[in-house]
Length: 141
Image 1 (cartoon, one colour):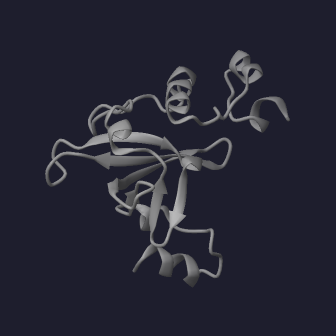
Image 2: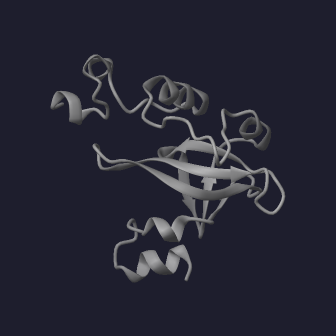
Image 3: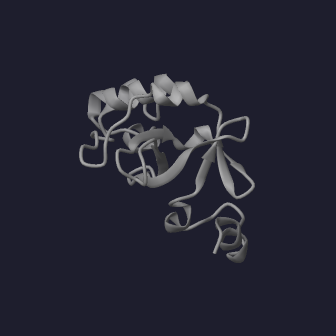
């Protein structure tokens, strides 16, 4: 079943199971394949999707490099997703391998990724002092 069928079958076009997103193609702005969604990283405290983890490169899944891309940088494009990043830029992005994931909750790592993709970080400086991130979670704002 396609992502589109699953989403429309639930009656809510913007709701999908994470399992239906895994393996979905990600295209650049020119319609060229950049990779596939390998995993979804959730911010459990904020109740939101934080990152799409893309696989890129390698042969038959061996040697793939993984990239955590801020979820809000992806746009729906038919049954695929579009990421407005050129292939050479993705090749140079901070990445990791399947056996050595970064600490996705580390604020310095989040700043690096958000800065690379030109995305806002998802927490404020006030939250950094308390160690609680995600805007409304730490400050009530």
